[in-house]
Image (cartoon, rainbow, N blue to C red; front, top):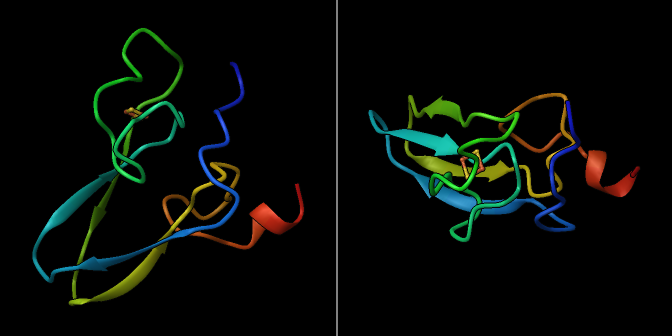
Amino acid sequence: MSDPKRAADSPFATEVEAGKSYFWCACGQSQSQPFCDGSHKGGDFTPVKYAATESKTVYFCGCKSTAAQPLCDGSHSKT
Ligand code: FES
């Protein structure tokens, strides 16, 4: 399995809405970060669903190295 592309050096602060689902790009190739745009097709990655239970700001991982997909766990400052 190949490594994901590092899309950003910091997380994407994103307003999510309760009851909505979001599909986080795991491969790093999407042009509409932090969300999947279908660019992963043919590769090793598939998007990760995030179902918002409340309306708030969440931090989607940008470096794609997080162990807490799809959210930032601070890995961007370690790798
Ligand atoms: Fe990256 Fe779909 S474009 S997971």
